[in-house]
Amino acid sequence: MGSGDKNMALRKRQQIDSSKRTMFIFVAVAAFVSGMALVVSFFLVQQIWFQGRVISQKQATVNTINANLKAVDGLKDNIRLLDTNEALNSVKSSDDSSAVQAVLDALPTEPNADALGASLQVMFVGAIDGLTIESLSVTDPSDEGALAASGGDSESESNDPNLGIGFSMSVSGSAEQLKALLARFERSIRVIKIDSLSVEASKDSLTMDIEGRAYYQPAYDVKIDKKVIKP
Image (spheres, rainbow, N blue to C red):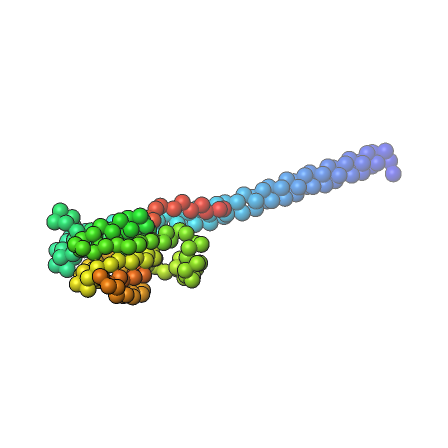
């Protein structure tokens, strides 16, 4: 083989090697671009799915707000209707208060033990001439030790939708005065339950021991919550 043939064979081999390197680089670049395209596509799909969840939750919030706005007029109509209720107007505390206030008076939102004690002294016993209060105690519902000592179940009390404040009192007077006191309990706007009652007669008067419970309804806490949607 001549030198010319050898040079030609060498050039062909170099061209083949160059073509292989070019093909390898081309394949590597194509693989890299394809991999990047797959990563970007996966990221975009994730973002689209996440944004769809966000939009869905926002739409649910908008629907809730729209439903609440539509219910406002109905609630106003119900309140106006309650203001004309004869039964509520007959038991409201004063002429200036609204009939709806009678509902709040029947079930206060807070367990104010001091206010209950003052009401029993002034509005019940104090409103009957000649009736004497011998003793009065009101159990603070936050006093778990007092509840346990009285045999109460703190768990059942906390699950009761109408929570009660226990009280005990002893009064003395004539039979008519004691009867008048019981009548005031019966006509009371405040929801009061008499658990036990006993009467003892002495030489000059009658003594009546009462144990009962006045109920209250905690107010509902209405607030706007914030919900975080994780990607």
